[in-house]
Length: 287
Ligand code: GUN
Image (cartoon, rainbow, N blue to C red; front, side, top):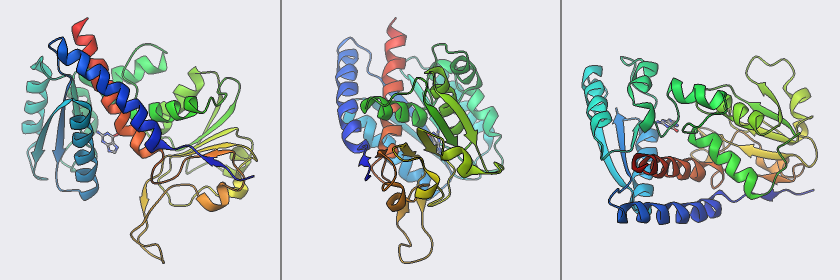
C-alpha cells in the first residue's frame, strides 16, 4: 500500500478562506479581529513563526500588532505589555511566542494572558476546560490535526490512537481531543518501554516527539493514518539544512493509508487555527 498525502496547504487555504469571510463580516459590524504577538529575543525559528503568523493575519483581514523585545528584557516590561493588551478591548487575541529566555517563568507569562484572549489555548483555565469537554480555545496544532482527520472522514470514534509526545502544547491536548471524540488513546513518550508494541496496534498515530525520522514504517500498522507534527531541521548528512518530520516518510508511506508530509502537512494548519481562534474571540466579544 502507498499512502495518500493529507495536504495541509490545500486544507489551510480552504479554511483560511472561510476565516477571511468571517473576519470581513465582523469588520463590517465594526469589530475587526485583532491579534497581538509578543516576540522576545532573537531565536531565528521563532522569528520565522511570528512572521508567518503576522502574514497570515494580514491575508485573512485580521489586524496584527507585533511587539518585539531584546533577549535581556526585564520580565516586568513584558508583563506590563500583557496587562495593557488584556485591558484593550480592540485586541481579541494575545500570543507570546515560546520559548522565552531563561529569566522568564513561562507558566507565569501564559497565566498572565486573559483566558478570553488566549488564542494559543495554553492558559491553565482553557486547558482545564478542554479536559472537561467545555468551551475553550483549543491549542492550535492539535486542533489543526483534528481538522485534517475530519477532512478525510477518518473514523475517530472507537479507533485505537497513539500519541507520541506529552508536551503541554501538542501531546497532552491532542490526547484529550482524540479521547473526547471517542478514541481509545495511548500516550507514549521518551520513557515508553516498547514504543513499537503500541504504535503497531494504532489506527491513528500522531508523532510529536521532535526527533527526526523517529517513527519508521515497520512500527506502523498496515492501513494506519499517520500524522507527523515534527518540524526538524537536519544538521548533518546529505540533507543537512532540510526540514524533516518525526516520521520516516518514505518507509511509513509504504505501510500507512493516509500520511501528512513535512513540510506542507500539519505546519500550515497550526497558523490557520490560530487565525480561527482570533476570529472566534472577536465574535465572542460581540455577543
Ligand atoms: N512555540 C512553538 N509553537 C508555538 C505555538 O504554537 N505558540 C506559541 N506561542 N509559541 C510556540
